[in-house]
Image (cartoon, rainbow, N blue to C red; front, side, top):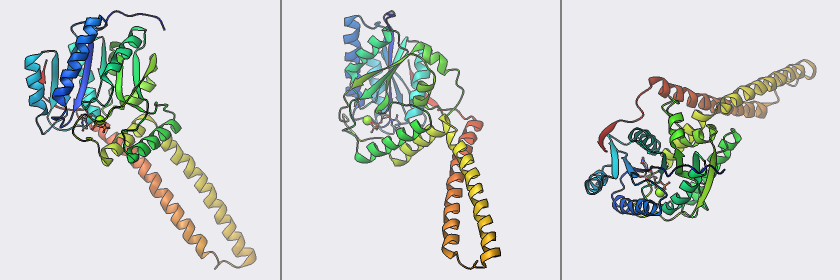
Length: 321
Ligand code: UDP
Ligand code: MG
């Protein structure tokens, strides 16, 4: 594409949860990135940073306030409690849409992603792309466990028809136009990565190298990752429900065949006491399959339950603009 848009006002959003060890250094580095880009003439000098403190219990917010008092390009909001990284990202996107910007980049507070790659994001934005996804060159900084579970998740999602690029974290640029379209999606449990794939706007990729976490430890654990994955699947696709229906149909067919076979055996061969093993195997198999299917349906009921209650996605406590 060769569109060459005007120089954008850039907003960078940074979700933080107990990041007192990194947030100061991250702010300084990102301000340096803004200054460099302003000097190069690739972004407007009204560009800014927007932090979302996801209910940290440490000094993260006081540090953000201090940075704001020194430089008002450092903006942010603090949640009343921890709502999770996806909600923090949503809040960031919604806030910068209100404040105003032409495009917005999300990056982690630990700067594991290469902040200088943002230059390439902007280049692609100006070439006419609405969504620029940062793709990791590899996952060498992730644990074996995280690598495997992430791979399983992407494989499942691809099976379900969502071609979410592997090795894409939440490091991406989206345009104002994308933000406006997002507003049309009223769902509370928004699955960002699914949305960006589904919406169908011009999308491109930029490769970057992952670094080690600057300081502190990872804020994700097994249950938060599982929650993210299950929410991703249930909010994006109903294929698992169809799978349950189709499976149920074939199981019923199979059950009917076994029934017929049992009756014929009883009537013509009179050897019905045999088949203890078959009974146990069938009982166990059917029991397992039924529970599994109930579980899948339960996940969707849960999703409905949470959507119907329609609680706010997050609650802001403080805001710096
Ligand atoms: N994060 C957040 N809320 C949470 C968990 C994480 O805002 O409940 C933020 C965290 O501060 C960081 C980003 O999400 O900026 C990614 O988290 P982390 O670096 O711990 O994840 P990892 O890189 O280990 O996947
Ligand atoms: Mg990280």
